[in-house]
Image 1 (cartoon, rainbow, N blue to C red):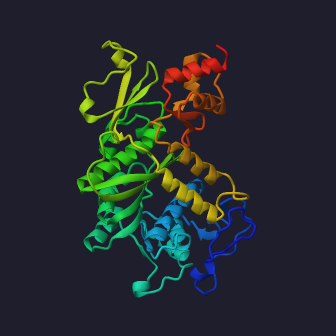
Image 2: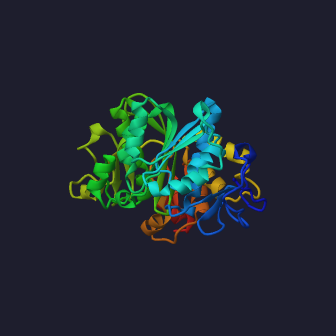
Image 3: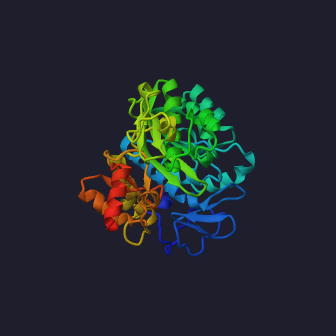
Length: 429
């Protein structure tokens, strides 16, 4: 049975009784909860007021924020469309499936995990929501390889509104084509990568095979991780005649974890300005987007000689467009506020993240971010505070925001030379 703890700092805003089966609970009530994700007894967790068992499955407490974002986006879909069918392709212990049922009010969830030894813990967790039968059936548990279950759904014309691909490494890229085939038009895919080596430019040919992008080392590697993930999805969708657009992109250092929520519709590849190449100059620190027809003509304004051109590194093709939709992030923030997930006594983590994503959605901001330590090194000064340099940038008419990816970095349309000049001015140089 789903259990609420009145002392938790992140309570569930839902009337859970309507979801429960009237029978004796198989899991004891949780002890005092102090976070949105809290340990109770061994293998027992409470998250947003929902108690579940992790068993021997792979489970990360730190991924609670990513689950929160998924639940919010699925709930927004249900509110706008009036229905929600979810396919959780790699469900683990089933907590995401359970939260989609309870919090997002999904009409139906297909919880799949290839490891059949997880069946008992998944069934026990989902059994907290009455399964029902026939057309009113709320959930089903299967044990197939992700591509197979996705392909079976496509062949049976059993399409879903929302597909969650929470995979390991760069594996989600291998499931994308099958996922798009089994997704309804205007549906959502929540994709994942934990491949930090590829985003750091350390496995060029692996990133090329997994995401279709040749990645070189660049100072904003973790943003590249999001962009190659989205770019790979753009490529796979285009093969099927679809176009995908990111609604939000999320990076977390644990893992690391790269997640993106994509909306799929019919269409062609995006404009060349949104899918192409990124060039970084190690000499001056500037970055620039490079379109397909500009390949072979790449040159940084800071130099003209062939010798200096060696300082340029290029990665791609990848997504060079916006990582978030500002309007969509605002909807998520408003819903989180309605649910009591942000605001007074709700903790600051989720609210801080969503507001920072909202800042990053400024259309004037380019891709990448600038680390203040790099600016200070080039200016030969101490590192300025973020608030000070952002205030100075705004006074000079530049767009600037913090980055949710790197805590000591900013996103700005001011070139590196301008950032160096402003930093020197701040220190009276």
